[in-house]
Image 1 (tube, rainbow, N blue to C red):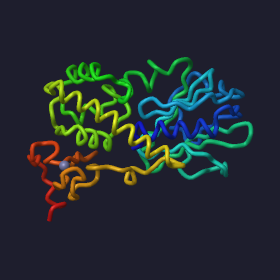
Image 2: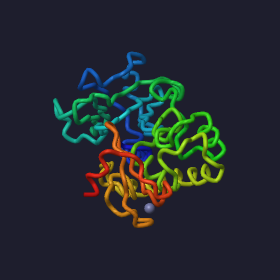
Image 3: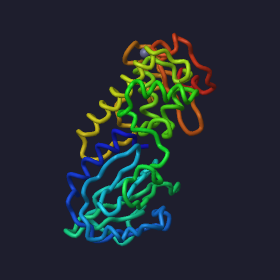
Length: 278
Ligand SMILES: [Zn+2]
């Protein structure tokens, strides 16, 4: 799933390409695409796209009178649409601009979770932004310490939960724990001040590196192509210490870590790791 760096860099690309263009029309191509009833997306017709912003894992298409909040989820993509085919493959919704170009929201797969919310005024406090925490890279160290203390749980789960800090997913959660030299299963309520400091620095560094990588591309990267030290690298040597990267697999995601860097050499219980080590 695209995470904060991918979404922010993509928002910047879309602003550069489509900013200032008046919207001719917005049309859904799937009955599941539009998640709101009011206000009407037609309210944006004739208005210029001021900018495309990013909040958490959402793109915000700001037309002044209304904002389209787009969540790509796992398989969604928002791309320039030169063909404007009547029935584009995986098409969910389309924004056609007066000068001819268009933006197309597609979603691969059958999940149909990507969507568009139309909101009036500040999107903060309104679905789907409502209730999500601050963007992870905007949180200062003291606030992070407070958030960690308020939500006692495993660190990896804390980082992925959008209600605590927003924008991080599976890849960044793995990479941030590794960078901070903290176990993904460390208890958030028991981290020392020094450990919180390392975690805060790791969040900043990992997001910044992701942004640097993503800004060098012409379109959003695929997860498998993003640089990583531990994510999806189980069985390979840790670039920092040379120990083998290990994995703990869950049905929806995989926790990857380096025992030497993160758990004092302890290999965490997992019934599937052995397949990487045969
Ligand atoms: Zn290591």
